Length: 392
Image (cartoon, rainbow, N blue to C red; front, top):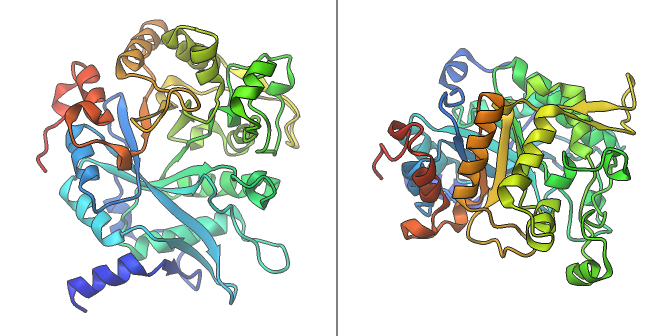
């Protein structure tokens, strides 16, 4: 098959890999190809779906050292084969991977309006461990493109859709997949919307209580004026990702990125409506995660309460780039992040692990409109050799 035909098939056909007989671990050649997290901090993490625009190459040159590809999906075919489904251009991702040897590549599950783990016709599904084996087979047949996975399951615009809430089975799959993936040497991360893992809540309020719902009104926007402003928006969750951490163990995650850019998140309310200092507001989150906060009402066999505690070595601050409007979706400038990083380092002996942003697809052509370039400018004094060493 010619290279042109191979690319055409990769781009136009959904990529599907079956769960048919295969070993439950990666081959030694694939294992040796897996990359570890960069050792320098802060990490610069960008989501991307378009491998062909040149923007991913540009972001890497600017300083991004982890690319999370969005998205891949767990899938069951009509004839009950368990598969991985994606429309990502795997040929182009391979080119990027081979060109920039220092960059880590993860595959993200989920996305807004994205499917949650599927079930068979009788309502059952594979365990998380078995779904991990499906992914490992997919990754092996893709020449080990991905060094690990990222959980990004979210809600749905349609509040009547099945994915407008989680099921406990979905969260169990995420947790069990995570522990199996870690045992196989894969990197595992998660990117909860702020309401899905909210460290800034009043510990005595219902906001510190677990829920499977993803159709809740945003907790901070309570006044009549606030409610009028958000116009019936009701797409928040409540501490749902805490269950996954509790079951898998925080040690099973290489990093956890908190999406401060969630629509009408508590963060954007506090900064834009309440007029709080953005660095102080980020530090409230950092202090909450590092000091720990208790989530109640957890469906755990051990205890209904669980303390969420994330060390700075695993905590990532998630932001938006130029697409954010600063009203529904927060805008956070790199100087604010650098100040918060420095304050974290001074207070705890080390800064948070990194900064994640959505999305490389929205990066501009000029340096001033590229988040990666702006982050490089703010953080390059920490380790200048890690930024901009490569050419397009």
